[in-house]
Image 1 (cartoon, rainbow, N blue to C red):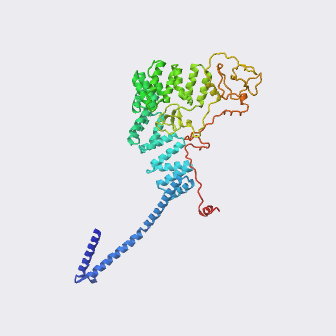
Image 2 (tube, rainbow, N blue to C red):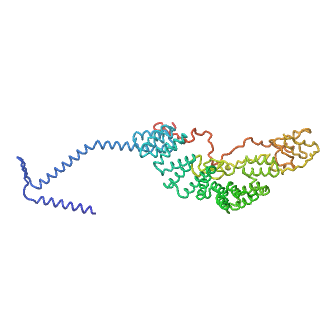
Image 3 (tube, rainbow, N blue to C red):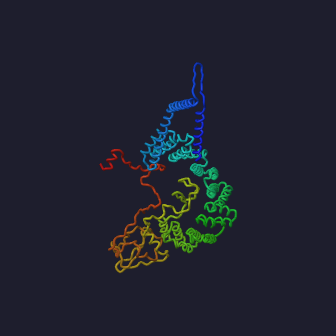
Length: 583
């Protein structure tokens, strides 16, 4: 509305001015030497306006002619830029769906039309990586690292290529340079932290952790946990060299991460040596409630030096009873009680706590049962049977990180370099498969474990109505059970029964009773009409866990190369047209 009013006012002023000029009387005379011009005022104003319009028109024509080359150059540049952007966009899309040839064509087009575009360099580098041309990829990443706007991206690419080439020294140097440029770079800080931990540079690792907290890469709880992990690693390394520094480090670590198992074990050891028994017990109890671990039970049992085995057993039973209500009868607590009971010669107590687990034992349960059989009765046969079952039994929890199983705790993962990656859990490879395939116990194990403990008695040979007594076993052959009116199909009066199952190791003493009849160890006359039992395979088939990637049969030559399949593109033009019609 205001513009309309202003326009009308201007029109009114122009009309008033024109009317005033038209009403002026007289002539306008211009004398210049012999030149004389005489005209009226309205005519002079009109001619002046025509002259001004002509000057403006001529000026615009001249400026247009002058600016035409520049406009043509800018138009060509815009077209090239648009083509480069188009090539970059479709090249990145081709990389996304794994079309190597199409990505290479778009990369070449982007390099021609937009050579200085950082995205064109990125497309060129990624297409070279997709083709497996590492030399070309490194050349492009170096060019990116020399530019100000793509320096950090170029360093990241060089770092990845160094990792793929197993150049750890070059990779850490690149990561340290990236940290100097950008302290908030997550990948660089994690890489340098992992490398410093691998070299045992715990002071440098703690400095990187402090800079990560200052840059806002981690929050306060994560910082406290990770700092406790690094301090624990330093204390474990210095425990035998500088005990004062080790004690100071582990005490700070246990304040930052009271549930960290290695920190609690080492701190309890130091407190026990300083005769601070109650404080050591509290440290172990706090970690035990969060994560029951056999090392914690061992440290709790020996927290007071000079105690007897019975006293250690009572202390372990007290610790096992402290598990919260949501973990009643935790297996770690029961195994700890069994271990302490065996040390205290309380074999009845050990069998009692292990009874719920012997039907489906883990390796530790089977080994404990073998130790009980050997220590209580001196039965080496049953001990060997339990040891053989331990070989085939389920795995117990272990320190696991990124699929890597370690026999001890480590601060970082050796696979990815991730800090605080190890967890006390069952390895993925030992979890049961969805196929339901289980490893059955052998007949020898069942026979040996079903038999009662041996006793030193003399067994008289049993006489059958039609056959002589079975000869006594020799050290190289297993005892043959006697059965009334049953004899092997190929046995004669002078020959013992023929064993058709796997050989049975010799027992130290003759058994008081024979194995149950249901145990398919021997073939008798009653089994003549029945098919022979399936032989036990010599090699146990291993079933891959459903969530375990396992090992590929034909893996890539380089473990760091990302293998992306290239879909077969449909032909274009007339060939594509005829292919669609089946010609």
